[in-house]
Amino acid sequence: MNNKVSMAVIRRLPRYYRYLGELLRNDIQKVSSKDLSEKMGLTASQIRQDFNCFGGFGQQGYGYNVEILYNEIGDILGINTIKTAIMVGAGNLGKALGNHINFEKRGFKLIGIFDVNEGVIGKVIGGITVTHANELSDFLEKNHVDMAILTAPKVETENLVDLLVSLGVKGFWNFSNMDITRQGAVFENVHLGDSLMTLRYAMNKNE
Amino acid sequence: MNNKVSMAVIRRLPRYYRYLGELLRNDIQKVSSKDLSEKMGLTASQIRQDFNCFGGFGQQGYGYNVEILYNEIGDILGINTIKTAIMVGAGNLGKALGNHINFEKRGFKLIGIFDVNEGVIGKVIGGITVTHANELSDFLEKNHVDMAILTAPKVETENLVDLLVSLGVKGFWNFSNMDITRQGAVFENVHLGDSLMTLRYAMNKNE
DNA sequence: TAGATTGTTAATCGATTAACAATC
DNA sequence: TAGATTGTTAATCGATTAACAATC
Image 1 (tube, helix red, strand yellow):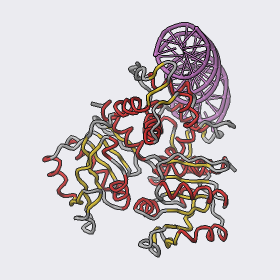
Image 2 (cartoon, chains in turn green, cyan, red, brown):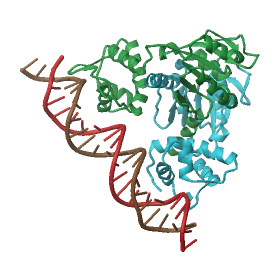
Image 3 (tube, chains in turn orange, green, red, purple):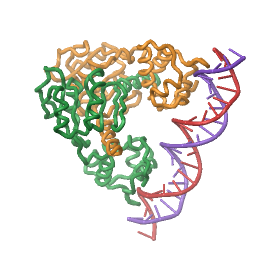
Image 4 (tube, chains in turn orange, cyan, blue, red):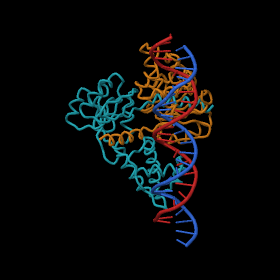
């Protein structure tokens, strides 16, 4: 067990979780660090080191029980406890995320979607009816909201964040294409443009 | 100048590029590693090390010329030379990417969008008319396509990739939620679900 | 010239890999 | 018991930070 787990390890956990989930769906009950290392393109040593940051989930001479390991990693990530989330911005990206991301399997429950565009208000996305953004403060006072997904344009987002933080939102999944940080809240800033440029670089390298 | 530049450095380049672009838009002509370090939350030393992987772009006693540095990083990333791209999958995510990503500023030009769903065929996304996926092979034989954006469901994507690779596609921006690799092509596998789980972890840590 | 800031080398820190005793 | 594979320590490798001479 290790109290200071590095970000590099944490970023690998969701990937382990995906591969273990697949084994589970295929009714595979045990897996060794060697099996996993071949599947995932990591070293067996690294895998064992990673898992042992959190305690010994394996059994010498046997390997790891897939189901136990899967659940342990889920617990470490915190996704077995649900937090509430709202989405601000119901454009194409909002629709894509709302309809296709399985929030409940990742520790969140979507409870509200907001937009300023009359064209989408009243529409249903991922089972939630889109509400006008001017009801946002009201909603936040009446409902406990842990996390906000930011899929609105940059300008609108910038003003919004402070309001949301002041009303108790503690986490942000931010697609606004700018890095945001605020005291007392955590931000997962997603930069799809950066990802695309990295691909462009890799393609030249590969030529 | 350094021949073996680490992935850690490369992943920071798009971020430098964004910050420099912002300085440029604000008509700021020079920047020191210290200025940048404060803006970006890195050490000045790391910034200088990063830039010096590719050669000396600065001037002692002065700093860096923003425009020169911006263009140099663009060149390193390869985004000042355009490669062709198609998108397979014109659902909400495809629409979001097609309409909102500025491909040309990131080294790509979108020249075709394909889907199997009759409902979207003929619609225009990001200036491109959606075509039926059964015309894909034809299109690839008539047009040189460097990169494919995979925004179709998992099942459809799996079969598609080998076809695309065999027809000369050399890069993939993959949103299908599975890791893909193939000889002779590079993949940027985007896992939004992993990003969301990392946020969930960070929120518990922050409590 | 004096001050500022780079480019670069050396020191430190952290992450990955190797090795092997423990043990199922 | 013999074989397999973990948990863990030690060795290596790589990335970040510190320091400072070079020089604009």
